[in-house]
Image 1 (cartoon, rainbow, N blue to C red):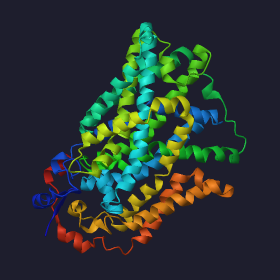
Image 2: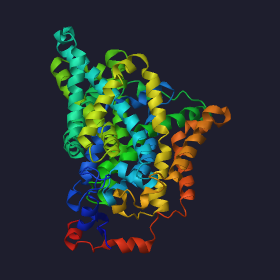
Image 3: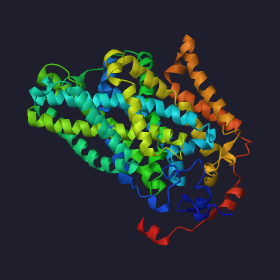
Image 4: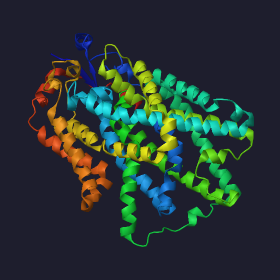
Length: 500
């Protein structure tokens, strides 16, 4: 019986198959596969999504830590570019599954961990995302507070002024997220050009008033290749970890892509180039501040506070827009989907977003940032790096084990082939344990420190090969004949081909 239709590389459920699983406990309107009409995101949408998320305060200041460790400006930018090219690979590999089958990340995880086991990778992604949501909301709050205080001196005398901003900014983040990824699509279309143009104007101002400044002419402090590599590898892992979380839940966005080509090209250019260019702008502007103000000002908020009130006001809006874009896109969608997947028949994506917001408040990000900021950032970065094994399992399952073939309908059937043993795929659990354990040896054995310094990379490859080996004879894998038996393959639409 044909249960799914494949046309132009996009797989959708037949009407009969949809009706048969619509009452399943694993199905709701947010987690179901997207229909053909819902594949509306073009390359422009994915480009603006990434540009909007990359143009943020952490990306602006990313190179500062590398330069403080001894790198010169081009070594820092090169490390940032390389790290983003590396993390782009799993992003594109996982994007393919989201685009082809129209499924969100928690449903994709059912394929390799089982209907119940999927909570392990989805909640692992959710915990770090919720943590970053609270922290980024607080960063945005303090930035807006500083700028408003500089623009309107009476503001800082108002009792509870920071709490007011936090409450409003938190509500704005959750409110946009509540409306789902389609609202993020619109937000990105607005934020990307506005924030991008503002960054260019800032760089032109800096160059006009001070030239390139001394930082861009400062040589590297490393005298040997060995000294450089000791800093380079852990720094590269940190850059990879910056977007390692999005490499997992990118299907949440790519399930709306019109086709594979547009999303792949857009993401391939927008992510590494935007991160590198924006980081360079951060270096160039900071270098100019040494000449203009006599000291290096890496924080764009502190820099904007030195401008006239009207510029500060505009800067406040731009910083808020940048913080909102990355926070909603990178830090709310994943935990909201993970929470929704816990009880699809009762919890919607919107409710998941609200729960994520409440959880972020309970984490008290203001307390974390005031007392243990460096520790938490290090911990969250480490946690993100250890998500590499989950990336490896996802890639191995879709590309090496199943070779891009699955029974879409059975992802929503509690007794389907992807239920495995009582809802858990033990092979996925074993591969995850192996992929995490090996890099951790680098913390315990000094001579193996390189394993920990490159935890994300080693974890990804180790778990990928372990999972592929464990799953080589698994009964859940569709043979080519079985895939053809359930799939109605339609010829490409000639008019659509002409349009391309």
